[in-house]
Image 1 (cartoon, rainbow, N blue to C red):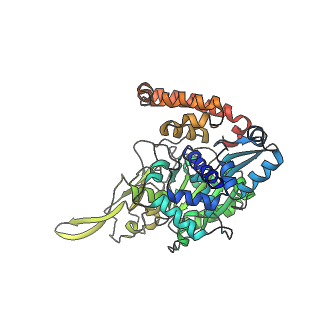
Image 2: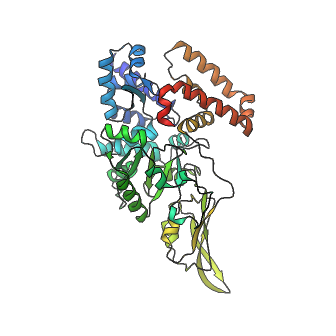
Length: 435
């Protein structure tokens, strides 16, 4: 009987994780991951934790668990990255950690001697990156609104006073405007090292900011750094030829990843599964001046998306020059820094890329695109009222009129705005953290 109850706890947790915005399709590898990370008791508890921040007081009441006992359990799980904890005005809030961005990163953001890291690395690789099974990547990157966006290297931007270059497009602004900053190991490169695929790029390269930095630092997953140290890490990573991927919001971004093409999970989704928008492009793209290009191929070798190739023949004699496939270009500017001949510049895209203003805007947009509004606004399936309202919203989302309305930009915009206001009201005083 105990074995059956244990299996049910993990099955229930799988289902709850699949309801998060980025999802988590079930698989044997995923079940093994959960059993290595969660005890049977923890799996049962995590499967009952909402995927939006909920106060400890309310959780204690709903779960009928003593407040102090529940606090001890959830705090211990937060220190291992299995739930996310927030602190505001002396009150603790907890939410279930998704897989991505969530307990995958939290597991590998630091060295661990309490877990079989090599086994977990192989299981996560099988689950997330196996070319034979792209369900996880398809779940995470479904829709147009994504978790991350490419940040153009500022050195590559045109000279002069260009009003179209906005603050939130600059990595330096994200760093310098943050209330807190932390640095962790790059989860992707750390995982790759356990697979025997050691990358020479810096591992201490994952920058976190604002409330996310405070949470990671509090739980030992990041080291607190000041603005100067964070800027020096950013510059060192640029010099190493790494591309910057930031939180896909305009205000209070929570992270900047310094990504390499060989290890990055988001870049891997683009290459392995051809999910072209797994990383939202910057508002810039590469342009090559063929008259200055020497055909050395350095830019082609350094482009993380392999968007640059070598081609050309001029006046009957072979002469190579670089050519950029702008459909693949992330607009990161790595190629600009690599070119020593001044043949590459970044030019503005004809149409600006949509970037959600706040975390609320991004969450609601993702929920609409992924058919998960019900889970967002009614996150507790144990409550009869939530289950009933979920069924109503699921029916609405599946209806042809709703789908047709969401295809009309003005209607979608109005609906999005209304849902964002609702999300802020639900968050109450927590809204101030995320805006």
